[in-house]
Structure formats: structure tokens, C-alpha cells
Image 1 (cartoon, rainbow, N blue to C red):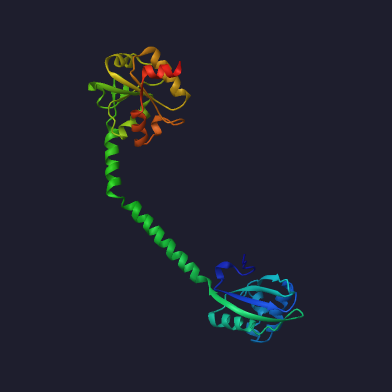
Image 2: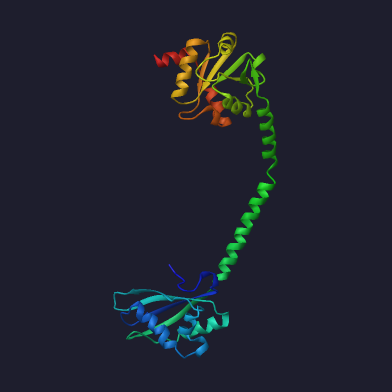
Length: 279
């Protein structure tokens, strides 16, 4: 990883990347020493590396090197610069005059002088496009999404009561009913367009539900957990439901998607079959 040392990353304009090879084994301090020592005085006092580093216009020099099996050393060094482009180019060119690193003959070649601000510009441009696209999507939702929100609002507004119990608008006159546990379950089924649903209000079964189960074809639709099983047990003791439907294992009716609701209702089983499966 290239670190920028004493030079604040926000002030960096350019990053000089150079590669070197040595006819022997050298260490990082040898490379740093050669960079400062062999460029000293070459470009005058104004572009002296030590002075530039003290004033923060040249950052810390980072060195990467590898010793090869044949007793040589190869590597790269990186120099961050906040100088202008011409001064940075002069500094880079000066590095190629280095002929020795430590006790070894060496060659240095500039790989690149990268304008790090260009990367920032590309990032800013990309992020601006992403942000604008998100704004457009949020401000102008698709027509289908708007339509669905309107429909959902209408369906939710259709919740009513039957003798004090939350229900859909078709309950008073419908021949088939779906019994669910609570108001939230009723709302979720209404969102999916199911209007013949009524809440029993928990494990204590109201007499209104008992009466309805005797008069209508009823499906008990419960959560896919132990609480759902307890409700089934309680309802079967007191009422005359015809079918049992359960949410997927571990899920509650109020959190099911439209697809999950219809699948669960399609997979309902007659009460007698349910009782046989539990015996």
C-alpha cells in the first residue's frame, strides 16, 4: 500500500512512480539515501528534495523492493508531490540520473507521473451520476409503483368491523370466510385483494366467530409457529371451521407477501385431514 506520509492526501497533485534495479543486495535506507544524495544540488536550492520535504511539498518516499535469487535487487519507489506539473516533471527526471544505490550500480526509470486529482474527478463524476439517478428515481417513481400505492391505500382503507371484530368489507355477505388472528393480518390480506377476512382476536374465541363458523365455509389461516398451532387447537375445540391454512414455517401472516398468502391458501387442508395428521 502506498502511504502519503507527512503530505496531507488532500494536497497531493501528482504521484511519481519509478522502478529500479541494482547489481547487488540493497535495503530500503540505501534507496532513500540514493534518492536524496544523488539529486542534491542538481536542480538548485528551490527544488532540493530535503527542503521540499521539510516544507511539505514532497511527501514521504515509499519503497518496495525484492531481492532476487541471483543476488540482485529490483523494486519501485513512490514520491507524492504538491508541486506544479513542470516542477514535478523535473523532480521525476532527476531520479533517472541515479546511478548507484548503496554500493551497487543501479538503473532508475520513471514508470508514470500520475495526476491523482484525475482519479478524484472520475470518482466525483461517477458519484454525481449515481446520486442524480437516485434522485430521479425517488422523485419520480414509476407509474406502476404509484398505481400500486393507490390500490394498497384503497384496500387498507376498506377495513371495517363485524360485531366489533376487524374484517374486510365482504364479510357480512360472503359465503366463505378466512379467519386470521389479528387486525394486522386482516390488513395484510386486504393489501392482496382478499376482502372476506375477519380477525378472531387471539386465543380466546369470540362467540361471533363460533356462530360464523357454523353458518359459513371457513378457513383458519394462522402463523407458522407454535402460537399458530395453539390457536388451531383452541378454535377446533369451540368452532366448526372447514379448512386449515398455515404461513410458512417461522413466518407470521401479517408479514407474508401476496404470493406467499395465495400459496398458503391454495395449500389449505380439510380439518379432518389435519386432525388425522396430528393423531
